[in-house]
Amino acid sequence: MEIAYLADYPEFAPTLAEWHYQEWNRLHANDSVARRLESLRAASNRRRIPSVLVAVENGELRGSATLAEYDMETRRDLTPWMTDVFVAPEFRRRGIAAALVRRVMEEARSIGVLQLYLFTTGPWRERLYAGLGWSVIDRPIYLAIERVLMITRP
Image (cartoon, rainbow, N blue to C red):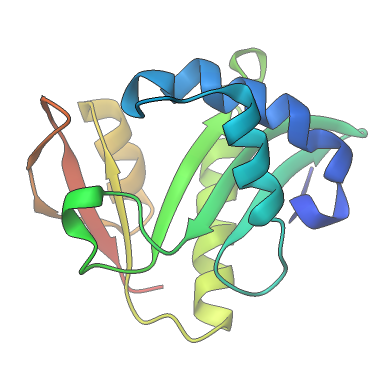
């Protein structure tokens, strides 16, 4: 499996936009596949913020993760963030999410990021990130749900 820049695989952007919309559309007012596609294309960079990384195996898209300026509207004081960690359901439980997270952390470190943030929900996701070196710094209510706000020093 290869973790690469979406910029090197632009043909995957429409599929990612659909996956991301299906997974997170309830988090954003006026969300759409078209808005997600535009956002992905704008973040299709290399070695800078924002950047989208994709997991590719045998020429097939498996998942993605993003290094972004921010992710939580109420915490714009924190930057940058790892966002949109997603693995297609049929490829889960194979270590792909962990590989994507590690690569985003490596990417952040390589461009001089000293602290990186994320938010998530659910104990199993919290355990995944904790096992990869992330620490809980808060449990805010965000969009009417308790979230887990985490930090790492990549």
